[in-house]
Each structure stands twice: as C-alpha cells, then as structure tokens.
Length: 186
Image (cartoon, rainbow, N blue to C red; front, side, top):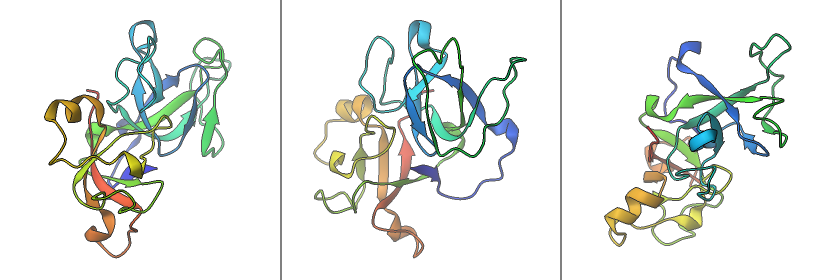
C-alpha cells in the first residue's frame, strides 16, 4: 500500500478518475499505470508485464484512493467503502467502474509498505530501488542496490526509488515500510 508520507491538504479537484481496464483487481493504495493505444484511457495495476495493452508498467500514474461506478445517467457516483474491486472482462464498455486516484506527481514523498521487513534482502533498508509487483505493490525481494545497478536499467525498469527504511524517519513507522518516490508516467 502507498500513501503520502505527509498529510496533504487535498480537495476533490486534486483527484482524477479513469476507467479500470478489463479483468483487473485493484485495491486502495495500489499504484496504477495507463494502457497504450486504444487502451490509453484505462488504468491497470503498475508492475504488470508490458503487453499490447500496457505500454510501460514501470511508470506510475498515481495511487488509488477509491472507486466510482457509473449510474444510469452516465455520471460517476461514489461506491460504498470498498477496499478493492475486481472488474469484469467487459468493464471498459459496460460496467465502466473507475479508479479514483492521487496523481503521483502531486506528492513528493510516498510511504510504501513492503511484503517483508527491510533487510531480508541485503541492503534493502538503505537507499535503493524496488520493482512494483503485478498488483501495484512493492516486493522487498526486488531491491536493487544503486551502486551496482546500471543507470539505464534503473530508469527503464524500476518503479520506486527508496530513501531507506521508514523507521529512520520517525518512531511511528515500521521496518516493513520505506519512504521514496515513483518513476513517474507523466
């Protein structure tokens, strides 16, 4: 799960919503990316494999904060409090459930939960880079040390630049959290 490192005064005008691509499961706090070509107006979980549908899964468009269905009049209406949604194979044309998200560029630093405590992979508690998994979340095992990685590899494949374990930033954070910034889509 991703969330702004510091609470920000955000109004409704700061959020954007796009229709979720067909057959996707997306949760609040997931990082998302956009499709390519005919699917460029739909969002997908960041970190999924590049395909004819997803141009560059390592680039992050934003972080999901909610979901919006389309009612009979065609206008978006808020859903009940859902923590995640799995959309049907016809979502792009029929159900048109949307992901409401904070554009990644509006937030300088993000707090990210890892699937394991930092240090499970050597060096992961320090500065470095992580890949997003297919669900738009961070895998601790994907850590890459910046001193050994090639710059072109970092720019093209890794989605999250970490400044280190979040517990270095204050006592209210755990060793399973890191603070950093995204490889942005736009």
